[in-house]
Length: 505
Picture (cartoon, rainbow, N blue to C red):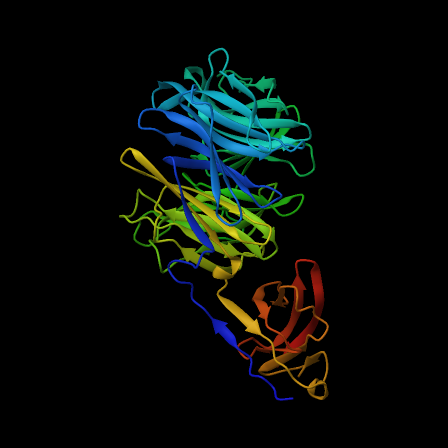
């Protein structure tokens, strides 16, 4: 049988990826949160603006882009939905806020909780104000913990000193408040509150993987991003700052510095991936630039490694938009956009696809219908991504939703060869090799999406590619590799299919 020539194609993504569909939401809507349920339907929450007041709203968008709008009872004015999670009983817990006043530059808010059924019918609605001398801000994050919902909410007041501090609210699955824990003063002569140097704006709340409590990711701080550890009763236990690793010339300085907007993703019980921006003050010209950084961090703050994202298609100043979604080892998305404080319009959002080893597989820059606004992303089970962008123009709002295929991001693929069985000399040949390496893949299920990665003896991934097409031999050019031993692994979402070693002479 005639041998086919291997095709190694390098495809540079266009400025606008070929998304599966695009839809503009009606009703002057803004989206601030969402999820994709088990049926593949996206449930998005936010608010509508009728020119005078805000009204909480929810939207359903099925896998084909068809949508329906649900408007919360409009007798409740100025309520804006913020987050949504699905409860163990299948209902939805939706949280929001209502602006009732202002202290300085801080808006005073009531927190609203709505329980909805699968059809988005309202089952219960509760409203909560801060007690005593405290005031709730608008930003909060929620999660399900067993049969309860835990919320961390930014709290401020004249007696709290600088910045906002975290309060914890605990609800049952019917939306009834069980407990509220406010910031406490540190025992000491000054009687100050905890974390006076940390501003808990735009924080994120996560369960500690060992089940012992919670982690608050404090992102807006004057000393870099912090991980704040709490036990199950919301007692503070530890404060960890994320710094450059010890072998880095910038060691003992924050990896994610002031005004970073980071997102997080747990990879194991003690390891997480962080995605965000950092101010780079180490430039030769003395200017302050922003970098977008992917990092692998232990829960104790140890940085195992990080990658800085660069781009030739957009401005050099970026900030992350708080988006990170995970489907499998090779499908992680992060979104970011140009910083309004450092560049001139237009502000083009960009989505990056990368692996858990922080290898960037591709990027899509969105130049039509979107700009720097409120950006959000959700991931489907098949690895597709739903990108949502809400923008304000004068007194009107516009929200665009785009579904992209994961293949829109892939920048390189490997096709397989078809050779006769007699020509296949061994599982891997020639070994050692000076140029081409052939790998027998006759036992691989072509129905799965299979990947190959090649790793050197230091653990660095040199190749990570999708295997395309049908055939029985994969041929890779390794002539650019240094002399030495290497490990190859062929894998898919179910795990490793085959692995082995070869020597580059």
